[in-house]
Image (tube, rainbow, N blue to C red; front, side):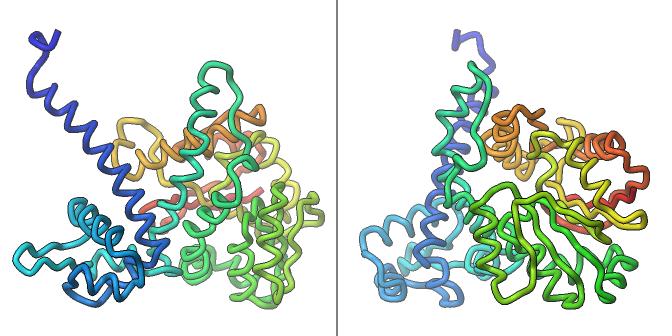
Amino acid sequence: MLASMDKEKTRRAIDQVFRDMAGAMSAGMALVGTRTGLFRAMAGKGPMTVDEVVRASQLQRRYVEEWLRGMASAGYLEYSPAAQTYELPEEMAYFVASDGSDHFVGGMWEMVPPLMRVAPQVAGAFAKGGGVRFEEFGPDCLNALDLINRGQYEQRFTDYWLKALPDTVERLRAGGRVLDYGCGSGRVAIAIKKAFPAAELAGYDVDAQSIARAREAAKELQIAFGSEKPSGQFDLITICDCIHDLAAPVETLREIHRLLKADGTLFIVEPKAADRLEDNRNPVATMFYGFSLFHCMTQSLARGGPGLGTCMGPQKTAGLLRAAGFRDFRQLDIKSMTNLFYAAKP
């Protein structure tokens, strides 16, 4: 069999396997770097010996040494054989040692343990159907989702994203009503309330653990977080990184349609993906397909939903909104490496 195969294609195939396995191991080592503070200990310090990194981090020498070697091999650190020093370049530190910023990437690595923990259940669902429900992922998954989104929501949501809706911004300044649907840990509602203190904020989520986290995060703010169905009508409803997860997306969007004032606005954030698979062959889309298989799609299927998946794209989003009764729908010109943005009106 091997003799009849194309040698170059065979070499590329095994290279692909090792690249992917190396990427998986690199993600695990990078997770250690953020959790232990190793990246932060090296940021801005220039070239460092193993002993200097150990002193700066106050961690065990042998573990630190092996981590440094692995991260240098992966390309995260620069290594000088002559001086036997390791350096975290400022360009890499910008992403890996910037906890709390809108460009910190550590939350993505935090998703790896909870997703791989349910991988056997997901594999079983291939044969028997169903999936893994959201609450089965555990608190570490909630923490990872919060880390992925928090910096962007706190630093971009009102200062950049919402500026694409100037009329809505004016309403919020005057004290409009806002609902964050599928609010998770509450970061969107908190960001809006801080930027527009006159606005009336509410957050809805079916997950009790998420609501508890949201209430704790907003205990000094007047935001009505809860798992009870919202009532009244709103000037703005936000639904962020959520529609593709839903078990009943059209029904949920119809409910949102009813909750909007006649001149209100629905603001949607969804993962950045094209409509066609051939346009989704890039690292971000590959990551999103993995998130979909092990988290987003499976939790929808577990509740009898359609399993839309993380990469459903603009056309599918538009179709769902039309089916729910929205007639005014547009994609917003907001620059992002990982997100798409939409506005819809009843």
